[in-house]
Image (cartoon, rainbow, N blue to C red):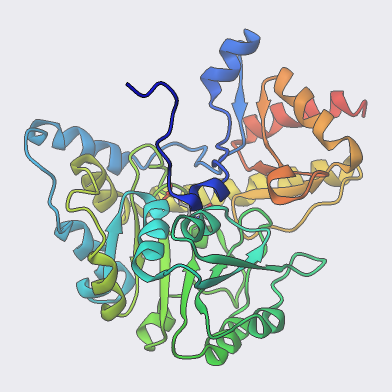
Length: 368
Ligand SMILES: *Cc1c(COP(=O)(O)O)cnc(C)c1O
């Protein structure tokens, strides 16, 4: 009998760095015996889940002996009608994360290249590495805006996918329409754009787009959406993509039949038209952003104006220490080392009360 581990994983797995999720509330509570913990680390909706979504889950419980609808047809229909596209232009997945993996599996061969602005969402790199493709990072400009010309010059014969996350996680900056159009027009025919609009509902800039209009106009672009952020349904895992039907057809080939569970389908179909919850969430976010901006200005900290539900703030050389002290006071934010930004933290915008709790903790740490 073999006693040592000789079972070799695929070589490409050696390159993959595990995803670092925000620390869960219960974990910090157990570790430090804290009564109160405020989590501002995963850009979740602090208002809670869409009440309509919750009700739809309750109403679906009796049917759990049945497999979910493999075609997600009811949800697809609601998505298609709310986006003004056809059902054939929609794919529903187990979170947008799954869609990023499926796009990678569907389109990337070993040696292909993907162009990814840096810093951005880490799952794009994961998908490429899984398939043995190369990640070509393009640094954001100094003020964290996208450098479209640099992205265009990075295109080669091997480029398969160009990623844009707008508003961008973790910076909160966005790509203006005119720059997106420039990029789309410069793309050779063998390139697909993956346009991640997970935070689109929070964006207020006039020249922002969620990308769907470019799908309708016939460009090779897949626009990603999630129910984890403004809809407040991160726990049930639903996301979707909108793309030309030939792109959707290809991705469907690698999708598992029952990837989206029945409760998730029901919740998402109800939440998508829950305007009251969406509007309240947006309002809370605008007020919360102002609260954090004021705090950071008062403390003399520089931060980036956000189009999303988080703010990236510069805490200087002591950022790691401040981050750790925030933890001991029961506040979880996201430390920037994973994005090569050791002097920054990303703070998700919470309720007024959560932001206040964070403000008091930060003030006491900085003695201000
Ligand atoms: C949160 C997030 C997603 C979506 O996550 P899921 O929960 O898997 O739907 C996708 N892209 C970005 C940039 C995100 O921040």
